[in-house]
Image (cartoon, rainbow, N blue to C red):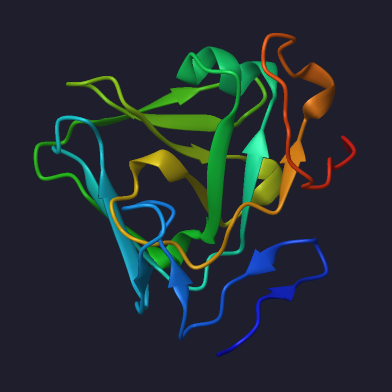
Length: 163
């Protein structure tokens, strides 16, 4: 059996022969070169071709407001690795004052994607929308300085400093 490795950014990667399903049924082992997902109503579907760049838990106040949650787990990927299927043209983009944009479904309201000039060429996908296994586990918490006080993080992932 292969062992997991830690990358320079502290990401835990799961070898290709052992993919831990964190988007699908917990604890399921799968082999795959991609993962798929969709918005709540299913009108917008997407496929991510592995490898992903990273997976992190973001605690920034903008993600909290956009998703209505304590934090969002994002999967980062090069944009050319992400195929978006939007036959009904329901994908809309909210442009933030910072130049970042957030993609969401106009029908069901699901927040799907994030793009930022800071990470040009990347598309970030909300991990909870995947229905199949990802290729790595979350590697850290980011923007933890703005975390909500009503959620305690009881794990040992590193907390990345804000840049």
